[in-house]
Image (tube, rainbow, N blue to C red; front, side, top):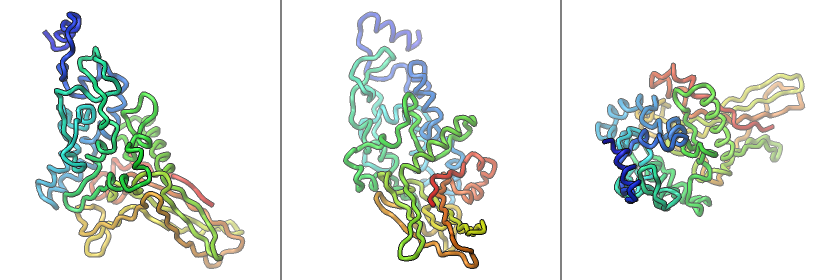
Length: 353
């Protein structure tokens, strides 16, 4: 007799469903009754946390530079094994009852407790649910998205959020919740590796909107000078945050004169972290001896002067474009992922004149 059939016989006999998960705790076990949710999760950053080619390619570098225990630290967050799933699965959130500290993935999972959900009702899909504030709290997200070590890995996203004006909401979902039935796909900036073209295009547009919601750019003129100003107006954490050593956020600009000649000003401003070894830039955080974050904290702005070009004919027009990549091109190359680089789009976030 299968566990599912045994449970249904108990339910027909009027018995209460068990507290735990008799039909299994893997995401695939949830799929028969939660098909749309499972489909959204399967293409999400959580569903792909173990299989990301960037994560897999970085692991040998982590072990070589920082030791075997460092590799195990990374695997503990990306491949937690909660309920038997390699990736961050259903019970990683719905089975969480607390944590051993709001950092480094120290979640407490209890598969014998009712699953956290929106209703205390007993469901016919082989488990009980109970409201649990932790499920929608910043504490749950922050347990895995606040990382201290190994090596030079520092991801103080929860700390940044708690210090921001957004902390009163105590939820990350206001920005990172996907619309409608795709809730469990969530919104982020990493690409959906291996996704069909339509799914990849949708994810890229959602990422672009997320960047655009966070950052505001304008061209201003002050005391006879042309300035490009970039401000973090919409994010409850620094931009970029988390794995800042992977992110590439920059502003390209150009002057156009009366004759239509363009004078390019590439990478006028960069927000991605600066990775250095011995004062020289490197592509991988595991090769660095210094990581300098250059992101914008919530509410912080930065201005850069753009000198007028020599030999240009007035009047002049300045155009600035804000761009972003989830993974730096140099990092993809250093990891030997040139073939996968086409899956990392260069997003044009905003243009200011």
